[in-house]
Length: 359
Image (cartoon, rainbow, N blue to C red; front, side, top):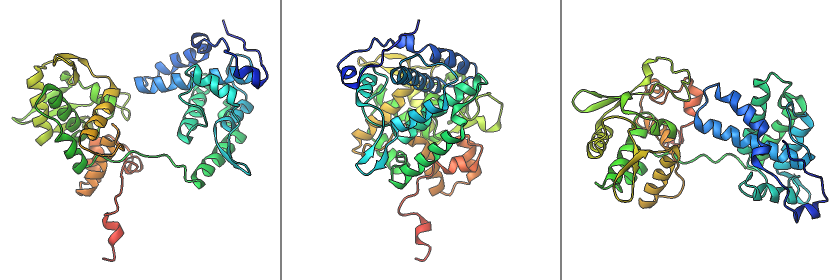
C-alpha cells in the first residue's frame, strides 16, 4: 500500500506531520536493491544505494503528491537537481526545495540536515536513479540531453565558486607514525597498531577489506612475514585469480600483526575484532570502526581532524611516490588497473620536487 499525501499550501504543510512511513515509501527502493544485490555489490555500496532510492521516493511523494514509479520523467530529475543544487542569483545563492518539504525530509530522517546538497551527494543520487533504470532496461531520464546538460552546467557552477569535493589528507609515514606511537601494549593498542599498519602496508586497504580479512586468507611467509590473499575487492568483484591478489606483509606491519594475533590468541575467523571495555575479545569489527580508530588515534596524536579511513589509501600512494616506488609496484599493491585511478589518490605537498625545478 502506498501513502498518498495531499498537496497543501506550504504554510499548512510546515505545521503538519505527513503520515510518511519508510516501509511504504521504499517499495520502489526495495525492488531496485534486490536487483542490485544480484550484481554482487559490497555492503557499503548497497547501503548507499538504498539510502539514495529511499530519499528519491520520499522527495518524489512530497513534491508530486503520489508514489514514485519507474520510469521517472526527465522533468522530475531536472526538478530534483534544481531543488538540491545551489545557484547564483541576484539575491545570492538559492535552491528550489521549499523549506517546509525540507523540514519534513529532515524530521523523517530521509535527510541529515536542512539545506542544499553537496555536489558529490547530488551526483550520487542521480547516478543511483540512473542505475535503477538501466537494470530494468527502462528509458533512462538521467540520460536525457537536457538533464545531462543541466548536470554538466551545475558541476561547472560549483567549480567556478570553488566548491570542489574536499579530499581527506593522506596518512603518509610521518602522521601515521605519530598515530602508531599512541598505541600501547594493551589488547586495544595492539589491535589498533596492527590494523593501521595492515591497512597501510597492504596497499591502503578499504574499510570493508580490512574488517573482512580472515585468517583463512592469511599465511606465514618465511619466518617473519605474512602473505595476505585479497580475493575480493572493489576492483576485483568477480574474485578473479590475479598475481596482485597476494599482498606481502613484512617489517613493522608483520611484527604488529604477529603481536596482535598472539595476544588475542586468534587462529581462525576474523583477523580484527572488537575489544570490550573489560578487555575481552568480541566479534568482527564493522567497517565504520576503521574510520573511528583512525580518528581516535589521530586525536590522541594531536593531529588535525582531516584524516579518515580512506586517508590510509591516499597515504600509501603518496608515500610510495615520495619514496620513488615504481608505479607498477604501487598499483600491484593498491589493486588499481589504470594509472589515472591510482594517480587520483596522490596528494602533492608544498615541498614537492616539481615545485623547485629551478632551485
